[in-house]
Length: 484
Image 1 (cartoon, rainbow, N blue to C red):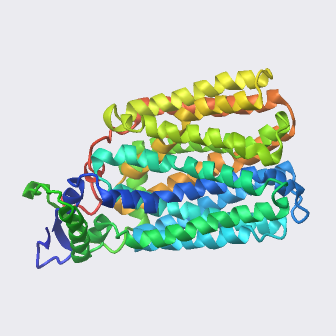
Image 2: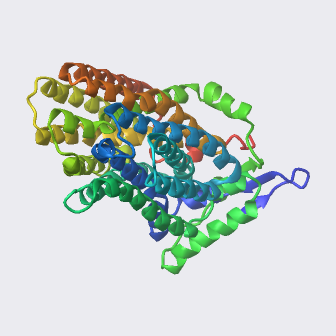
Image 3: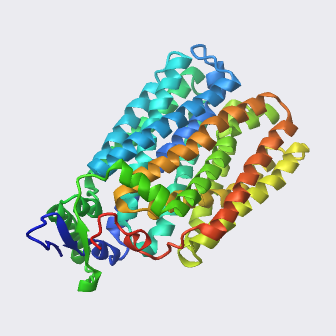
């Protein structure tokens, strides 16, 4: 039940909507949310993998004629676009709502990735990769916010990790697409790499229509003074459960809270919450996000170059090595994800970050001493990223669940943008230069640096991460609009 509690202050609302959403059992509605919104990470994984897998074809392209450095710059352009898109669309998501923005951002992605396949020069390719990244960056804010606000607390950790981990299903799909379209025996490589990017646009069209059945976040609606709409959305959701024979427990009066509706949250108040009220949480989020961004982007964006440069793997065969690498990354969140809800956030975040750094150091030594083949190198990365993948997913979980709903999308955007700018935009370019040197020792020094970043982040998580497991979003961070 949602009601206005004061005739003198028409913006003060008493609501039980968060409690009604939290009491829902896992059912078809939540699976639809996961499928329609979580597929964003599949698109991101597809894009990133295609960019790496087509590196050889881009170098051989008569229109583009990329160098190794250009391949790194293309990755940086994509990430720079993601930073820009995350900040701009994250701000809009908190003002205009989750649903509007996850339609706008998917439309931008669709158009930009299709245009990438039509690129006629290096400049046009970089521009379209920037715009593709902007669409995906905006998706992170809108989608993470919506998922957090629609999934009950007892499932939130596992669900969030698996959804974020589905990036690697996209990576696996990208690897298969690359194998099929970059085989010169089947198709001209100059046409193949272009068709590869069109495949992303095709998948995006399916996603666009799936999202028509996802409602606006009732939590966002009630805070923005649209209590009647919020109530109608929740009743529609509950009706799906009742019609399927599920009996819903009643919500007591003690679960109700008073919220003061607002049109928007001033940026001054948002930054005060981030850097004063929740200063410790902000520091933890920045450390976790920056470390994982540097770790992933340094290694994954340039993996195709490592295979072709140090192991003489043919560019049209790179996908066969990325495929098992991607599967290992997805298995990590699936196997370890439930432990984040049972053992707890703090212990599992610290463990996964520490194991990622230690395993990278071990396999890095073997690489530096030339004791690996392309196959054993891939097996090594599979073990490293079995832990690194849930660690990175947990970083996104942390920054999306530990701040008030009024600034959730903006917080996700700022953390993502800062971390990507620090650890992501520069990393592919720097590691591209390290690989271009042809020196295993120099590249190993790069691996050591990102491994120590993960170990440092592990210590931060062990002491300061928020134990948010099995707590509602309002328990973890009270809304700024709550009437106290």
